[in-house]
Image (cartoon, rainbow, N blue to C red; front, side, top):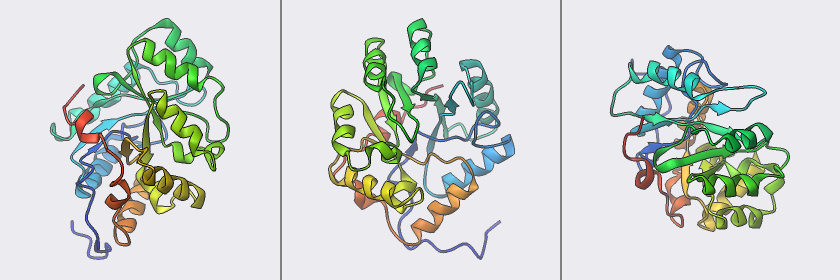
Length: 247
């Protein structure tokens, strides 16, 4: 039903992004969508914003979200059987860089990855992992291509974008969150996000949507400012890498 009270967008939608390669829409397995109905509702709202294909990347964090290939695939099948086939790209995971992930890598069991063996990783927001460079190297040695999620959100990199650039030079792609550019996570995150874009360091952009509040913030932002110009110095690879369906 049309919401007559919804703010009219002043600027273009997110069609330029096309593929959302970082989201938490799988039902009931992390801090994202709580049910299948919730998943489908969030997916529909993101499609309304112009996004066309989605890859679902729930957390794998032993202490809070001990997901496995099986738990992720089971949740994915629920949404894949209910949503439009054109919208469902596939599933992967957002792996926390910690001792558990290090041990998991040593087993050489297959990871939940995005197309062409891209693996999304993250760290604690408060302290850089001492093993981040080792993990990047180990992933590459096993044929994976690491992507660091939302580098602008790590407080230990605020004022140290050279460190972020160093990780990129090691071969780790950088994925920025849409909402960081609007200041949703804070003014420092907004500042770093814009600086990384100005330097042309961002390779990918994701919604990182967990719930309706995130979508409302994006909708509100689109009434104020168009995000696309921030990425004009970046070679975004969302469509190049992830336009094909993979499941």
